[in-house]
Length: 229
Image (cartoon, rainbow, N blue to C red; front, side):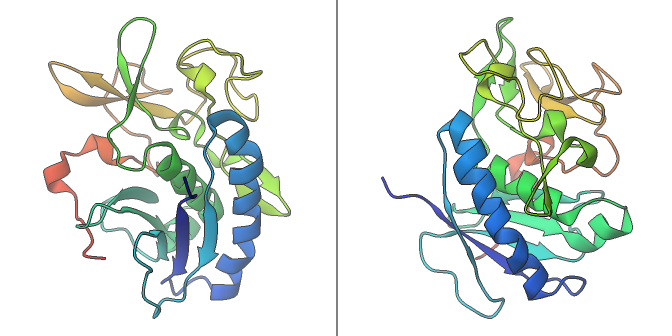
């Protein structure tokens, strides 16, 4: 099977095309070297000019300025055609003191981990957790650099259940299954309540930490703003 091609487009006014392009080789290294080692998932990244048409079959992440969902630094959803689409809100990232490249890395890895936002993992106690690979360790300071570009940490399959992996998350910020690092959160399916959010700061609560790169799991799919593209 051929690797998915993910086009990254800069539609923001606060970042130049050159800044976004500069991050792509580091993102490619993270995916092909680090993420692929644990999740057996890879892709081919390319930069697509804002005025260029997206090739049929490609996925896309658009870096823009302001969010269309309150408080979101980024998220991924689907287009009307059913293709994965990521959004990164660089102006809000910069304004809030967050790293736009960490947000971009976060959305890229979660798009690869669950392209159609409908996959789950069952924990040993029978709970269903969203297959979101960065939320539990999403804080900027938990990330790491590749060639000077700051990127998101991510969990390994061992976060959900024991495996032969040598760590629970790539940077070894947490040490056991289902642990949430400071600032982290995860979506859990409660048959009686639907999707709820557990956060490290409010275990059992439904709140999402301010400035989170929140997932679409917190919303009903009928409420998504699907892109025509």
